[in-house]
Image (cartoon, rainbow, N blue to C red):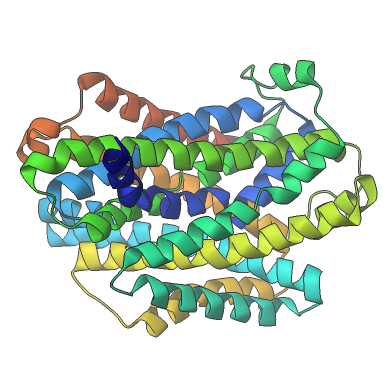
Length: 403
C-alpha cells in the first residue's frame, strides 16, 4: 500500500503546472471585478467553468500519455499545410493574448509593491519567467513542478485571511449558484471569466507536459498512468477552482460598494481600507507570483504550439522576446492595464472552440487512441462545452455591435 501511494505521488505534477494558467492575473481582474460589481451573481460561472476545465485538462493529458505526442503534433498530422498555418496563427494569437495578461499583471504587482514603473515591471516579469523556463528545460521536470506547486500554495493565503476576517453570507453564496445574467456587462464579465478559466493555450500544453514527464508510456501501463492523471487533474483543478472562487467571494463580501474596484490598483487600495493592509499586500504578492509563474507556463505553451504545428523550434530568448513585445506595447502606450487584462481573457475565450473541437475529435478517434477512446457521453460533453463558449462569444459580438 505504501509503495503504491509512493508511485502515485511520483507521477503527480503535470496538472499543477497546467493549473497555473487558471490562476493567472487575468483571473484576478475578471473575478475581483465580477465580485466587486455584482456580488455573488456570477459565482455559478466559475463553478461550471471549473467542472468543464477539469474534463478538458484530463483529456489533454490523456492524449500525451496514450500517443506520446502533444495535441498540436497530433493535429498537425491531420491537416494540410495551408490549414495548419492558419490554425497555428490563431493558436499563436491565443498564446500572445495570454502573455499580455500575465506580463501586465506582474508589472502591476511590482508597481504596487515597489513603485516600479509598469514598463520596467513588465521587463522584470519577462526575465523571471525566462529563468523559470530554463528550470523547466532541466532533465528532471519534477524540480520545475515542485517549484510551481510551492509558489501556487502562496497565492490563496491573502484570500483565506480576508475571508476569515469577513466571512461570506451563506444564503447569498448559495444564491450565486443559480445561473443568470444581469445585462450586457455581466455577459462581458462572464465571458472573461470563462476565458480565464478554460484556457485554450494550456489545453495544448497539458498534453506536452504529460508527454515530457512520462515519455511514451508502455501499453500495459497506460491505464495506471491514466488513473493517476485523473487524481492529478482533479486535485489541481479543485485547488485552482477554489482560488478563483475565493477571489470572487472575497470581492463580493468585502468590496461591494467600494470606489475604484475596476482596477487592480484600486482593488489593492480597497482591500487595505475594507479589511487590512496585510490582506492588501498579500493580494499584491499573490498577483506578483501569479504573473511570474503563469507567464512562464504561457510561453512554454507557445513553444509547444509552434513546435507541434510547424515542426520548428526557436531559441528560448527569441521566443520570449516575441511574446513579451505586445504586453510591453500595452504598458508603454498607457492603455488601461486592468481593462487590457479583461479584454485579453475575452480573446482567450474565442480560442477555446479551436482547442476543444480538435481535442474531442482526437480523443474520440480509435485509430489514434486505440482502446482509450472517449465514451460517447464525454465526446458529447466536450462538444456542448465548445458550443456554449461559441454561443457566448457570438452573443457578446452582437451586443457589442448593437450597444
